[in-house]
Structure formats: structure tokens, C-alpha cells
Image (cartoon, rainbow, N blue to C red; front, side):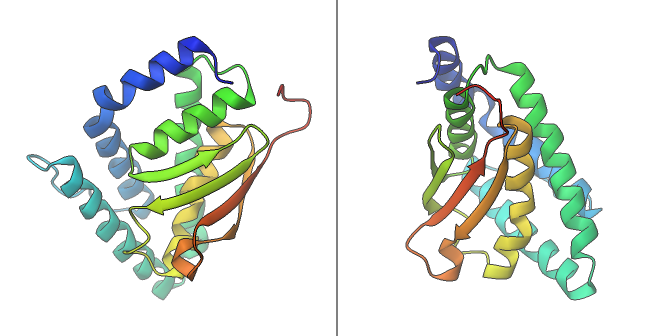
Length: 182
């Protein structure tokens, strides 16, 4: 079970940082693609999420068509890794359960219903991006999920099924490093 201080922080942070967090993620992603961030001023959170889904889908498709996916996925992963480490450094994460709670809270900001357990099981029942992403784009953009998990949870994320491939839910596993506390 996550510690009380972390639970309290996670309960209030999403409301305080929703728009800024999404704008920061947009910026990080645009930089990884080598693009300018689209104008976000005056947009609601819903409009920002929709714009982000369309932006990332378009950029991922262009990268796949140009054959630059390996380099761009590395950029997405590296930038997300730094973001995950930064988030981890700002929160009182002392256990796998704490990391799982923080990850769940972070994904709520993106309208993704992601359940994470301390043993590393990950289930996504609903994902805002699934209707907008093809299976190829989803796999491409999962570099960001992998980076966030590596930075925040200090583990490795591997998907075994995805909503975008017709599955009822996404299923993944976090491989925690040996010796990390439970």
C-alpha cells in the first residue's frame, strides 16, 4: 500500500497541475519529433488531449513513413525517462506500491485508466488515445510509456496485448530490478 504522504500528494497534484503537466508533455513530445509545439493557449484540457492525440499520430506516421522511427523512438524514450526520474525525485516514493500509485495518478491526467499493482501487473481498461492510434502508432508511442516507467518505477515495461490491436484491454508487465524494495 502506498504511503500516506504520497497518497495525499497524488490526490491534490492532478488538479493543480493538469493543464501544465499536459503542456509540458506536449512540449517534450514535440521536441522529440523535432517540431514546434502547436498553440495551446485558450484550449481546454479535453481540446489539448485531442490535439495531442492527433499531433502524435501524425508525427509518428511521418516518422514511420520516412524510416526514422528508431531515432525518434529513442528521443521519446530518453525524454520520457528524464521526466519519469524528475517526477520520482519530487515524490516520496519508497516502494513499488508507491511507484505504482504515482504511475496510476500520472496516467489519469491523460485520461488513461491504468491499474498497476506492486508485482508489476499493468492493465489499461480505457485509453483516450486508442481510438486515434493505429496499432503501429501505439507501438511507436509506447516508447514514452517505457521511458516514464523506467524513470518513475525504475523498471522495464513490456506489453503483451493492446486495445489498438483489438484486445479487450492493454496488458503489460513492469519488470522491477532485483533488490528493489517491495
